[in-house]
View (tube, rainbow, N blue to C red):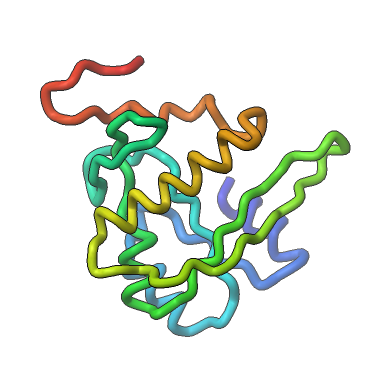
Length: 147
């Protein structure tokens, strides 16, 4: 399946898919050898590994810290982009200004900043957010499950 997706995406650009099981090292290696844009989807619940609990819609949510770590290790600019599905089945990608002072020295604050940005975009266009993803699956120790 990954091979088919990669083949389809290579029709337009030189695309590299890095699976989450390949880890941060594969991402850093690719970023250092290529000047291609790097697209990162941070709003998924990958469990406790490499996650911290920061708020998302006022709920403590397991959130990966990779964006702050990757930006810090590579000195990459973070330019948020939000896709919008259009009525004609196309997608428009809206780019926002590069974040200033990111990453900071506080990975928790950086991760909260990321969640706040995603939450604000979801509030602007709730029909565009992928609500089917179980974003609140992993709970803090001792807290009852959401689903």
